[in-house]
Image 1: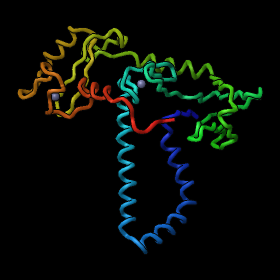
Image 2: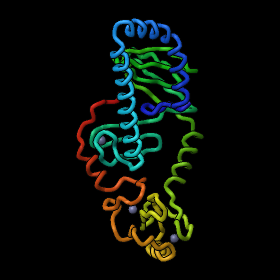
Image 3: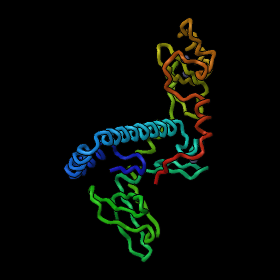
Image 4: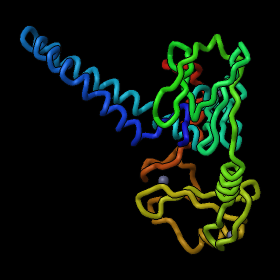
Length: 257
Ligand SMILES: [Zn+2]
Ligand SMILES: [Zn+2]
Ligand SMILES: [Zn+2]
């Protein structure tokens, strides 16, 4: 089981939540009926508050994912450093990491004892929960922990390396040649239909050939102007102006553990 500290496995989480909610449902129903007797308005106010919270959280998640996709820190907007299973922001200290799927974690306690756990989470109170086979086996106050060791399986690291290698390669949209992400020179954002699309080329020559082959429609001139100045197509990629605005944002209201 891969445990991502910040982005949980949605499906499994949903299932877990549903199970937990069954018990709470009766309680909730009682409380709602009490409220409706006295004050119908406050119930709908609570519901709209919940909806508002969900909407805000969704917006924040989309923003985080978008920033991460661009290699930016969700907390301060600056460039992050990517490691095999970990992303770190050198500027503000934000980090995300995936703990071993095939391996496990060893929690070294201050008294010298070692606790093994398949995965771990730090809860709001600061304690560490050791989870194995979907069950919390141990809860350790963080003050008792000396350090945590992650034990990785070689095959998992090798598989990830291979995945990263493939991600770092770019296939030229003109000649199909595969090049290193660092090597490729030309990028075009263009809307040949209604959607903005990113095309990547191994060389200026391939880029020009593409432009010649696929001229823009008369009222659009994607090749000549920046996407920031265009509002004719459906945008999929952040423009530089948006990125600058995000960078200006210093602190986010909600802090992740
Ligand atoms: Zn940062
Ligand atoms: Zn090419
Ligand atoms: Zn456009």
